[in-house]
Length: 186
Image (tube, rainbow, N blue to C red):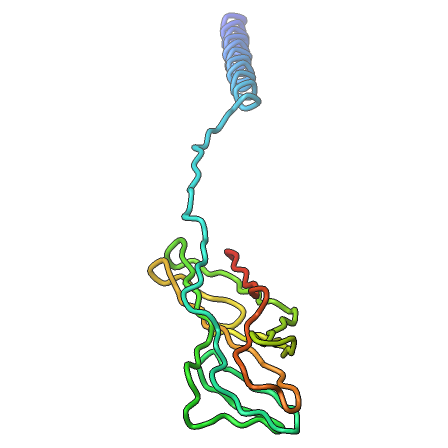
C-alpha cells in the first residue's frame, strides 16, 4: 500500500511541477506580450494637394446706356441680365444705347465653389464736360453670393442702381474709380 501511495504522491508532485511549469510559461509569455503591447506603433502616409489659385478678370465694363432726365429725380436699375428699368422722372428711350452689365471671368480649380463679395460703397459718375455727378450703388450679381467653377471657370454679371438728379445735364458721365468685386474659395 505504501508503494501505491508513493506512486500517487509522485504523480501529484509531477503534476504540480507540470502545472507550475505551465503557469510559469504562461506568465513569461504574457509578460513579453504585454511589453510588446506597450510599444506598438502605427504609421500613416502624408500627402498634400496644390490647387489652381482663384483668379478674376474684368471682361466688360458696366454701362447704363442712354437716359432721359426730367425735372423730377429718379433711378435707373441695371439688372445682371442686362434689363433696365427706371423710376421717378427718368425715361429709358427706345434707342437705349449700349446697355451692359459688368462682366467678370472667374478661373480656378474645376468644380470648386467660391463666394462673391460685391462693393457696398457708392461710386460717383462725373459729367465729362462739367462738375455734375450721379451716384451708383446697390450692386447685384448673377450668380449671387456663391458660384461654381464648372470646368474651371465661370462668368459673373454685375448690375447696380444709378441715381439721376433732377434736370441732370446731358453729357457722358464716367466713374472716377472702379468698383470692386472679390471672390474666394469656399
